[in-house]
Image 1 (tube, helix red, strand yellow):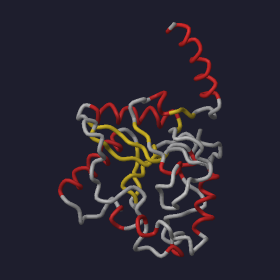
Image 2 (image 1 turned 90 degrees about the vertical axis):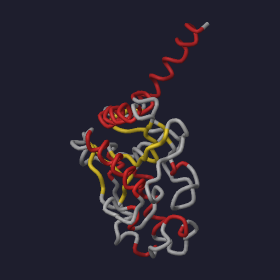
Image 3 (image 1 turned 180 degrees about the horizontal axis):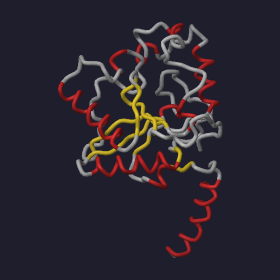
Image 4 (image 1 turned 45 degrees about the vertical axis):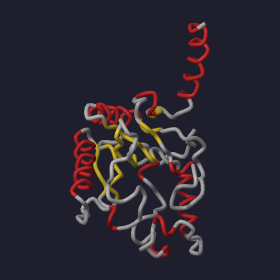
Length: 221
């Protein structure tokens, strides 16, 4: 019975993988123990609504990025820790949705939670929203570290997607524990070929990314 079930499932998985452009993979197929919580699939994000282009809570990156993330995951696992990804490949359709939202200045439903100190009219000027995103090239991820025993995220001093200086990687007004957690994330990601982004402790891009000038727009599903 197990043999028959395996034969039934394998073609379905193959078809799913073939839908991705060449050079892309589902992270679950490369590093199945990495956790995923695609915030833009749901309401828990700075817009307060599901974002266009995110049809399923499933992680996609370039294959080279997925392989590098597996190395990070393997090292963290030796400390009973692991990765949790909030965003990976992001279609251009989603970026367009961000831009459209940012231009509606009276839509501030999530301001208190995500950008309490930033006037929405300055989100473009201050670099929080842009018409293009590295995520659309497939080799950028937003992530944190979780304790595998408790399932809890390590305290990084500010939540994911918080627009403010406390999210900057140079921010100093942190507890010793928060500094230690941020340092662990930064050092481990850099060790396996990722570069960070100064305004977001959670944001990393693979060095030597395979599609540095291509912005994709296939849906996340």
